[in-house]
Amino acid sequence: MAIRSRSAAGARRFRRRATGIDLPPAPAAQPLQHGVDNGPPIVVRPHAFIPTATRDPGWGAYLDPFVTMNLPALRALHLMPRLVTGREGARLELIPGLRAGAVPLRSPVTGKVAGGVIITPRFGWPGVGQVLRATGWGSGPEFLPFSLVPGSGREVPPWVLAGPVLKRLGELMQELRPGYREREAVRTQPRGQIQWQRYVSRQMPAGQWHQLPCRYSELDHDIRLKQVIRWTLEHLRSDLTRTGANDATSLWMIERIVRLIEQVADVTPRRPTHAEIERGTANDNFVSAALREGLRAIGWVVDERGLGGGQASDGLAWTLSLETLWERYVEHLVRDEAVRTGGRVRVGRLGETTVPLAWNASSHRSLGHLVPDFVVQRADNVEIIDAKYKAHFSDLDGTRWTQFADEVKASMRADIHQVLAYAAVAPRARVTRATLFYPVRLEMFDALTLRGQDRVVAMIPVGIGEVRLEMRAAPFGVGS
Image 1 (tube, rainbow, N blue to C red):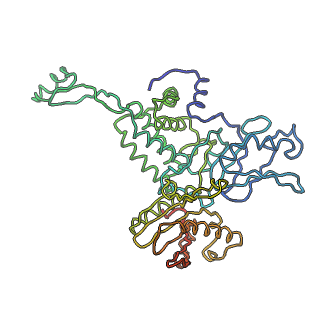
Image 2 (cartoon, helix red, strand yellow):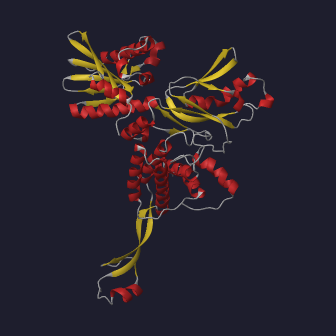
Image 3 (tube, one colour):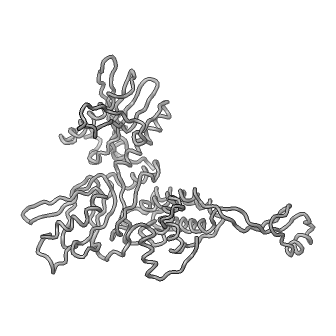
């Protein structure tokens, strides 16, 4: 990686270009709106986004420009804007969806970042951390191409944004580029250049006539890149140790970092220059995706973009699909159970469970197939499984597991109809099982398990066979 000098202004331009994310410094003392996934609406007050001297009370004519300007960020976090009118005038609300994350909000007057929104997971960060440890960081979080989110750097555990960086470093280490390295060693057979002065002064007086000190070039991975990787890993370890020493996921991540450092222990750590990262992240067909993404992640650590411990007040914009994360966690549970019961698992996201529907009308071709999340085939039955991330279950306790409100019953009824439709097209078996997985808090799961109520079953006769319908509770995260 060649090193080129550049001016301070050029370095600032590079930081925006190399990371692929616009990173202008966010103004200080800006409001950060807080919400919970699928939770109550977030009320956005206009005073932070419209200068007092240029507006009437309320949003006035700035409401539509505000929503239009911030719509890409709101959509990325699945936040739905809603205008509510009342005695106090118009009020702008943001309705959270099934995503956690953070995005900036811009002023419709200046076009600059004037605040932000952060959505936390309803089931808590410890559960999310435990699920990510079980499933890997492939299911999130992912970074968004927006400005820094003011005040968000200290709002989340240090591993939330350090995790994706560590994942990219691991992938980068698997694709290290080969290069040549100068080595010195005492050998019984000559190689490269023999160091005669050393041989005469050390080997000969000791009677080691057959041992030849040699200097030679040996094919090795890119030494400078390995040095940069080691510096980044040690930087992450230091920050996680300082800020997350009592966090189970941080401790797990530190152990993983230590194992990665062992793979580059033969080099000294070196902080990278911006020119090196720029060259590696340039749009070059000869640069692998792992190298480009890995160097971008290293750039975020170099620039202290709210990674690995929340040292910076501002943080990168990011999002995490909790619905996808729950599905990946259920897949982990299903595969583990299938190993113990002799089942073969097929997965919908991999295109292994698709069932085409042959409509006689072209207007319905957009609904051309059914895709169950999982199908498990065993010797005596086939099981159709759907993972349903229904956040309202987090509000229940063990005594109210079977006492649902009408709207919850309607939602579950739709889930039952869906999984039974999947069961109708399942491979033939004497017994077909149709299972719905719902997330609950760990404390509730323990209470339900103690009473044998962590699953409820209904038998449905179908011809000469039957469908065994199950609704199962599973903890969002497991005990540490």
